[in-house]
Length: 493
Image (tube, rainbow, N blue to C red; front, side, top):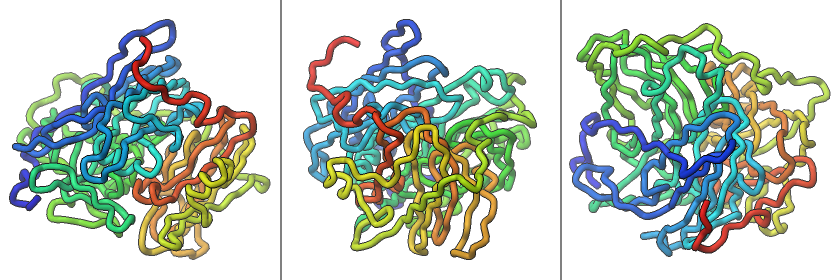
């Protein structure tokens, strides 16, 4: 679609995704029902775009759950029999990204649900407060399924978070950032540029193009999720004022970290506080994208959204940032020793395929799902060193099951290791590995034995075929055969 047919940036009103509601609760368990279906929705003014959404929503409903309460989500696949342009059958596998789920509920790529089938996913929610997200993980079609709209936010709350004076409730706002391209009729175009990446010319926040949000003169907490298929962002406020980072992928940080720019790779989540009390009523503040290397840019991809300061604060409560936020995180307390095992994962494109240590997911499939990049002990602590010795692309690497701490980075194979960036100094489950970078992580492999995936979260790279697996301990549940999807009709929840 031509630029002249697209809405001007900062003219479409900001919206918040719907909130998921349980269909029933019993004891310590809440039960939800989500149906994946095709829906025509307005993304661009004047057009109805065909999307695939959880409950027909783009993005899907936001889950707000409490630590210690189990959640069962019945996922029903009522998608059409074929993708509208690519033609494949849209089988799905739902991954709750950041959850320490059992293998059979983790969204293993080959544990798929075909149209006309359903599966119950069980989530323990024993982890501390954090911003998770759920998205499709169907093997070889993750990029196109997520691009069609199969993604949503999932927030775990705990008593420590609730006791803090940080913005909460109405002032705790999800920002799900994606990018897309549209044809002349307003339908989504999928072009992965010879399996290297998909970069749209329209930036969407919560499914709206370059929206404008009305805000009060007070602090807001924004949970920023980069749900784009391939695009990485470097975010900055045009006023030059800092964001205050108070949370990373796997929870709140020990202390606040003010930063003026924020590099955010695919699937990373950052919780930031912006203080609009610094601006007069009538001020417009815009969130910009200083595009990192090896992204494809267009006329307006340097813009994300705008905030219009329209009124004074309606309440003074939950409107400050303490000097200490969430100390005592066990992962952040991990320290390498001389005996800590170290593994290396090399992210390389060879023979037209994206590989990890020279292997692809096709190798895993050919082995009958037994081939593994690593077999850490249950409860074992290891250092993983991630190598990206290419200047042509970056890789956001995601390790399922575990949280980790970034130890250091090495640029251009210099041999000099430097501390992680200020905004990364919290518990993580995705690490942005830039061009010619090597990054060291430390993690503990708990709480379950079993087989889990590790992959690049540029979803085009994942699909072609930069994904492997590791097996924690022995005796874990099989991720494919333990709780397979079943054909409709489904019994009552």
